[in-house]
Structure formats: C-alpha cells, structure tokens
Length: 250
Image (tube, rainbow, N blue to C red):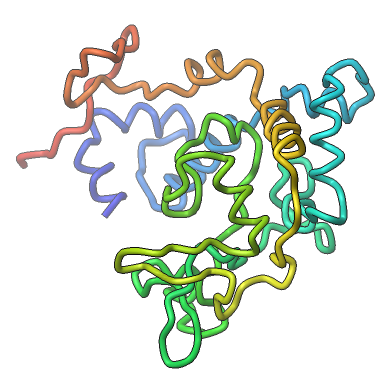
C-alpha cells in the first residue's frame, strides 16, 4: 500500500528517489531504507546526562546526581531494563527487549491479564506468556514525550514512578479495572520499592537531565518537508514546503 501511494505520487517522489538511488524506481526496500536513514538522523545524545557520564562533573546539580544514584541503585533497579546509551537496553544483554511492567491486571480465569486489545507482543505471537509485553522505550527526552505508557494512560512521570514503586498499577473503576501487580507475565524485576517524596523529587530532577539540549533545533531539522493538508493556526508552514501527497486520477 505504501509503495502504491508513493508510485501514485510519482510527480512528487520521482525526483527524490532519483537523487537518492540514481533512478526513480519506487520499491518497498528503497522506501524502508530511506525511512530508516531518516529516523537514524534524529537521534541525539546531546543531554546533560551524557555530558556528565563523559566526565563533565558539573553538568548535573547535586539534586540531579542524587536522582541518578537512585536510578542506578539496586533498590529501584531501573537500569535492569533502561541501560545502554539510549537507556532502553537490558543490563544483562545490552539489547532492547519486550517486557510486561504491570500497567494492567484484569482478573480472568484465576489469572490477571492486559486488555485483549492492548496485550502487546501476544497479539503478534499468540503466545500467552507474551501478554502485556511491550518494547522498552528510550528515556532520552522523556520529559517531552507525554503522555506516557504504551497507550498514553499515564499523565505524569510521577504517576509512572508510583506505579513502579507499587509493583504494578491498580485501576479501581472501568472496563480495565484490576491490579497490574498480579499481571500474569509481569517481569520479575517489577517487585516494587520504597521511595520518599524527596527521593522521587530527586529522581524526577534526574529525568529532566535526559532532555535533548538542542531539541527545538532538532525539531526544525526533522520537520516534514510537505505543506500541511489542513492549515493549523498554531503551526507555522515550513518555507518552500512541498505540496502534500495527492491521489492520482489516472
């Protein structure tokens, strides 16, 4: 379908494919390669956290350093899943994995599951033990990626921390009421922990240091080159934007 749309819009994309590949042929492999190249270009390690790890000891305040210490502590065990350069790899394998972290726990047949419409990796594999498993996200720029959780059901990072501290989220009302603490395939590292309000404040301060410092510049660099399909009052059109995709009538 994607290839068909690109081919239908050949007056727009032909020159772009010619410039990238030497001819204007549109293929699935070329489209995915181009998309991968674009997404790779928007990764940034320009954060105060990375500067601190590289030896710039004044990059973090004392409060932020305390938060980092909590983040890396055995008590919170955050780095068992959020390790590596992007803080999304497991400590053991340094690979990005899929985990159930106890967001949901709907009681059914003596066990606790995620909603059938939100059951993560299980939807792809049909394996019961994959229930609720989602790919570990990077924490880089996490302050700017609200709402949180695979389904955007956390409205604050404080709520995320409280859920982990409890060992899983409890939902009292609604169709998804239940206790994620007992979720069938929850990762064994999500056992809960104690944390004071001051410690939580320090941890949140540390998460602020993961913000990309050139974020506004990065947003400009990665802004869509196409003109808006629907003109928005609060969005400035990119100069010399390309007219958006239109279905061929031929």
